[in-house]
Length: 515
Image 1 (tube, rainbow, N blue to C red):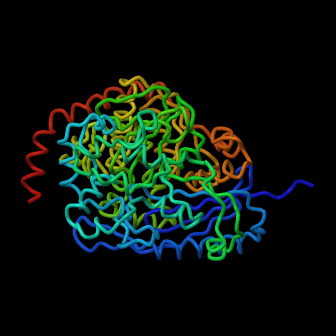
Image 2: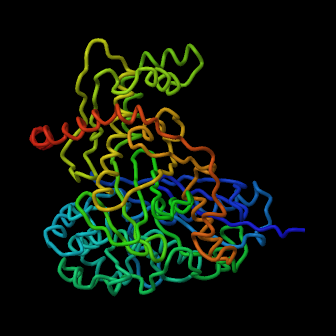
Image 3: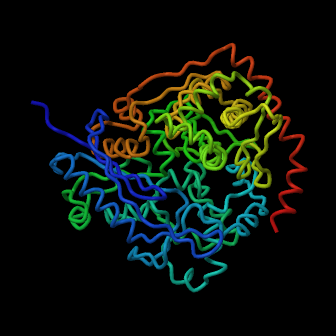
């Protein structure tokens, strides 16, 4: 009789914690989640209380064990994924001295500008563009400049992933995933960039950062007795090093091989790929060595607003469609997808820009905004919906084009998140980029990715690549329509020209209206 064996993943998102238990072949057994609050004490600030994180994780874990009926002794490994650039400070006891500064907190925007103005070679990881106020160095510099007493008494500074690993194992580590992607850490060039930190007046940062930087999936330690009691588990379960939610999601989608590109969708789009050699170019973030898999480098791009534009449109512009949906007992999205698909390529001359919250990549331009061109009295909500979907797909293709220009040629896109609910959206992505779209059976990529890391730490599989291949399954593949791809070429070129022709005008209007 085959021994029962399971692995557990903890997924810590912005709104709550989710615990998933899988068998060692990747079949999901149970998911349980608990929410925690977000605090916004001032404009541009976002904070959370780590004690509320832990309470939510413990409730979700206990609920998962109870709901599944699994004996905790059959769990062979576990790991975590969390939001990235969520920063905490503490003394050596790892008891946070303040609430965590969340990834979306932009209080460090001025510090980010000063870091960019340093001109240091480390800025190649930002595509030689602006530094994000999200990143740990910017937030660390803000604390040093604005809370000098806190900076002085804080002997440790780290991310959410590191805090959670400590709560689970008692070990103070940093994930190479977060360190490489957001701290400018380079495993091939000596680790922490001391000269860079010195140039941006953070010469005392390294002494506060975790001295042990660990690859994802490597065994950090066994689950402590105290943590096991809180979580409803058993002490000694192997705990593997975790990482950032989106990047761990790449593992949960088995997109760890060069040639594959992960498209993680939700309120925004994130584009992630693995390359064999360093890639540094304008409009591309990275490449980050050993960030996900040892021996490979990660590149990324992103669209700030995608699903959030669709949500805005349906909420504010679709009153008549909502009424029809109610009368017919259907979903608003089913009606919009059906009617938009029937319109054909180009939405009958309606072109949109998806820059509702600026452009993350490839233009790295926060001062542009969304736009429609070609509106006529004959256009309907379905035309606008199709134009928005197409604009999002053009934005993704612009990022892929910058990847290609830098030497990376994707052969397929593996997708997860909200866009999976719309076959029309998936088909449009495939047609615009002329790439097959692979949809996995388990779309909970981060949670499964965490469990995969736990499987590696527990010795169920020898490495991430083997574990990901063994524990992920394909549901279906959306193939591109060559004829539609040819039709889309015209509109994609006009999309790019749209930005080039109007960006200065948009900058002036944005700066005039935001005072």
